[in-house]
Length: 142
Length: 150
Image 1 (cartoon, each protein chain N blue to C red):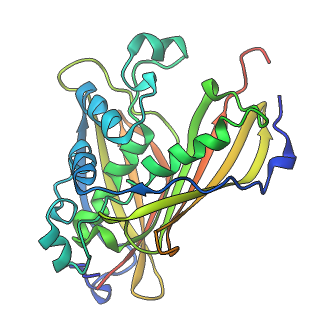
Image 2 (cartoon, one colour):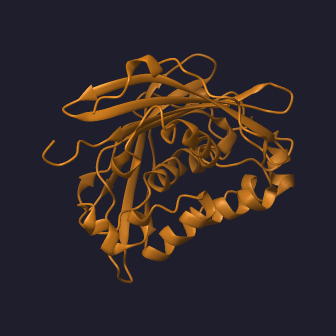
């Protein structure tokens, strides 16, 4: 593993570069195909509303995949992620227009652990709401 | 209706091996818009110390979730899948998943809880490679929401 960030160069509180990720209906169709999750709440507005959702929502796993990019873009080596967990607290609602929705992700080093690993706590927001809770990654640094 | 607590600890037989392909990893990385070359360029992956292109950290869910289907569709367990939402997800990687892996998943029910009429099911998926080495463990919490008026 060859992360480009050195363990000695980070402190508790070190902020990772924040990122914003866009998601449209087309993104969700593509993710459905790649992941094999064809639940209609992610592409069929009529179905989503019938089961009580405000509109089509993004796959939780899509949001989870985007959020960790703040960590993997920081370290350079995605193989350095040893642990990653989230709670899905609110759905990312994706309207049927050209803009879709955005997911804003920030992260900071919350703890320095053994074996050159650090715990990064992530915050993911969409439309002003926290969409992931307890979002934490343990990553091995150089 | 509350799920039967006696299912806690139950393990399901390992799945047939899933062969991880380079192009499947590429397709997944493109679907999440991630251009990290470790996912698509074997040379870039080797420069990072990996034997072949690696998969994004959440990729393995596509395999473990399919395996968890054995649990959620177990007629004896009787989970109402039409009311299920994904509560939590966690991965612990021994090493990254990479192209060429032939992975099997063994699913175990870790916990069953009932909270305010919701059934909460914790499933652990242990992922092993062809040599029997542990690659990653995935924990999936599924919540079957209480039926309206129940």
